[in-house]
Length: 284
Image (cartoon, rainbow, N blue to C red; front, side):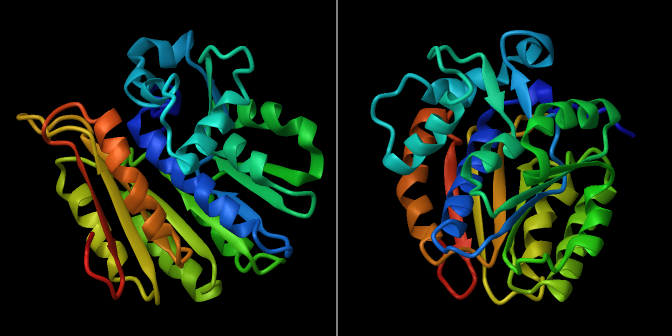
């Protein structure tokens, strides 16, 4: 089943959390001269028009990046993420939202590489068109990103950020996330693995962070942003999280400083809040 299209949700509150964390992780990798790869297992179309097509139908970006766009009080780390979005909107009007591949590309240096996978045939074609001008720096593959990790890990430079961001369209996506990261750790124990997950009422979604915590990883960080109370009927996404294996030591402190701001700006009701937990540490 391939009905999910991320364009409907581009730039929403979940994208803000996911892409803010992605930018922080990518910039951390750039602090050393050694080359690295960014591997995106579910890359989508790469970038999305917000003023037409799928994104305009639901306009979820208005309660996500839209709430940050004209703020003049953005904390510096968050401002860097918003500036990366502005790079696709040079006239200052929010019309295009970059997906994770485009944001990742902005951090790459000449020696770094981007490996992108997308299973949906239409999105895979669009993704390839968007990144064809960048030559060997970016490799786009129309295929299953979960399966691809077995062939890619360990990467040639022995430094990599692996972003695992499936649509959770089928119930086995949760299981494949856990098994793929577990297998990846067996092949490449020192990699940074960043898993995005939705906050939903269904049991599989609630259990996923706990299953990730039981992986054989020496260090992990689990951060979530809730923007509203769960609906009475249990429908819809009320927040999301990022589970990071082998996080930079400074990441928890950076997020603890920024997330109260995101709760204040993106929160939709009294149920808004955030949580940070990490291995060997007390929850924040």
